[in-house]
Image 1 (cartoon, rainbow, N blue to C red):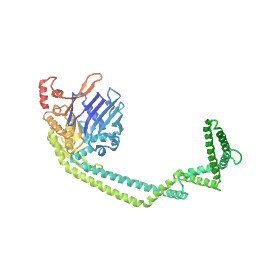
Image 2 (image 1 turned 45 degrees about the vertical axis):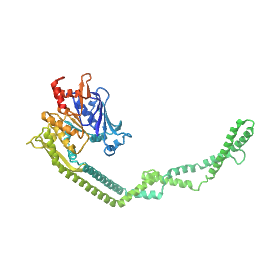
Image 3 (image 1 turned 30 degrees about the vertical axis):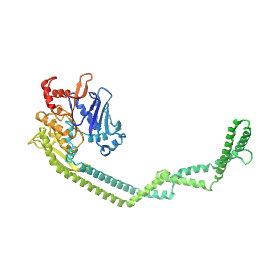
Image 4 (image 1 turned 90 degrees about the vertical axis):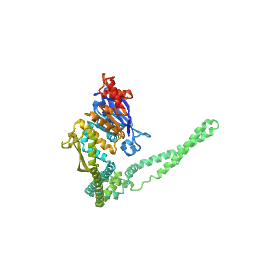
Length: 553
């Protein structure tokens, strides 16, 4: 996975920048105050960092940052959060993430231009990016971060996945048992009400559609005389037993027009309409007679309907449920009563499942603990070796593993203790190291942690702070070695690191009102000139230029 493109709009002094990055070591250089840190802020936003209203520059109403990543096959199916994978357009093979920051500080996270939760963006950031800086290095003070670094160095990915799966099973078993206990207790408290509901509603044998049908039938029976009079009157008007009704008159009119049709053919359509009307009125008359015959009331039917509706009303009032919903509520009540009757057995089954899940989780945690304990000393020694290369010869690292409450990461608490110099007692790394030392410690720890893999893109924000001389060469060599297996984005003041770059960007601030920061990719002689500037040479300094050219090989 590689960062292919980075776009920044209106971030502090950066009006617009669009960078095409490459594999290997990408460096960003420039004078102090030019705005290099803004690049780290932009990438941090894409990794889910909290926004700051002060980030919005003077060139618009919002800040916009976008990045495009090349990802490995299966990334969306196997690693990306489900909510993000669901947003992927058909056929899309790269990942495009973005943030919009308003002047108020409110922000929107976007994936392929579609809104997503900031938590999902943060999860993506953990998969795609690692950040190491004087500020970010302080994350090393977090026990969870230290635990993750040890696991990364030990290659505990499979054990971590097994632990996470066992923890999910354990949590699910706990929830199921708690829900069953609550349901059983609730059912026991309501046993009398449930039994009455099952008894009375079961005895009433209510059909869900019955209340509406009974109400309609009652209205019909109450107005039966009016209904009979209306139907009989309509039938008499259409087709009376004596004399002509509408049916007879329409038939006679059709006959008269039919006779005249031979003298005026245009009357044919009128004759056809009259004949059709006559046929339809005949069908209507038959239907009206049939309806009238079916209106003979069943003796006592109205009283029966009234009594049935009264019963349904009483049940509604008693149990606080619409009559149409009573059958479903009755089934639920019966299920609750069944739970009471079989609850002991069901609870015993769930308790056994919980015990089994707890044992499985504890075993997974035990395997993780053994792997961490085995990896602790080699991890310490490897970090000490890296620190020696970075000018901290004599620094000693201890990995302290203590019991912790069982959770998704197992049952260990890891603390990294450092003695920055020989003869000093070890202490938590965040409290015993200076800012420059902390950056080098973070680099050393991440180099070792990445020996077993990690996010493919690593941002290093001035990890060279306080470094010079031979140590600077060691840092450059270490970064070059690290870039063989990962994409590095390195903000640096060291010419030794710039001289090792595969891709070189210069950050430069142009004075004005307002001032504007530009980011340009350097090629050829421009790289030599920039490295010469970093070596302290003035513009056109031939000695510095020769030194820079030699450093660049």
